Image (cartoon, rainbow, N blue to C red):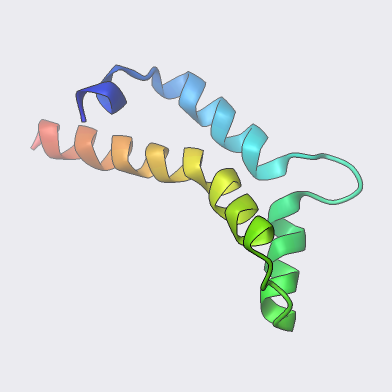
Length: 73
């Protein structure tokens, strides 16, 4: 977990936003995959991996924020 603590917060926020919105055209992957999930067509392993790949920075950001909050308490 020390590795997560060493990541600069501003850089992690930037990477999280970019990965959540990539690709910018025609539609971000996360929106596309979410609509596939709602339609029940998110079944290919590559699509499921893509969702995790695009959400990985957000998960790391949440862990970092949680850890920083715990260290302040």
